[in-house]
Length: 121
Image (cartoon, rainbow, N blue to C red; front, side):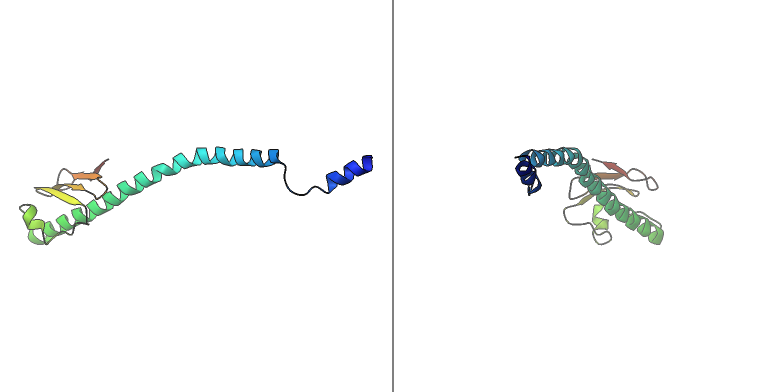
């Protein structure tokens, strides 16, 4: 009788229901821990993309100043000089100061002509 029982145990193939439930629970716990951490990456990437676009606009302003020794007079003077990505906008206030709004509504400001750019979510 004991031989029959040990023979049946040795012939087992596959996993029990309890083993499968434990594995699924562990995977669920790991997913619950990791998914919120990945959510912040898209916000950071959006901010960095807006900052990179604003840096290229700031570089264009600086290049215009270096060539002409004067800042553009107003928004109309920027029309052919600075390429703005689609969906983005620049609010230029003169003397190299501007507020750049990206297509994702991330706002980057440059308060003075030599100041660093500041990202405002």
